Amino acid sequence: MVERIANFLEKLLIGLIRFYQKFISPLKPRTCRFYPTCSEYALQAIKKYGILQGTGKAIIRILKCNPFHPGGYDPV
Image (tube, rainbow, N blue to C red):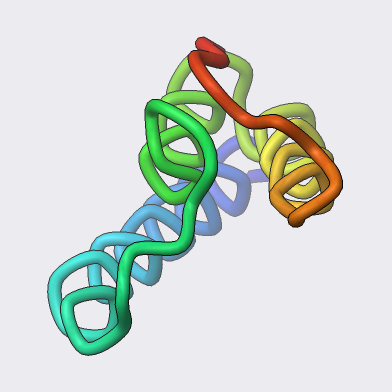
């Protein structure tokens, strides 16, 4: 049962990220300092590490995405 809930939450979060990529991100100027972009990084992290650890890695990455960090290539 817990696995089904985690699977549902993972699919929901991936759907929300894809919605952001398709409908919201194109409306804004490119601001991500990293490659892959923070949203693509989040997708890769969730698929590779699962919902909890992947979301944690994505949050840390988003917190690093600021003018005081040089950015650059940062794979999952």
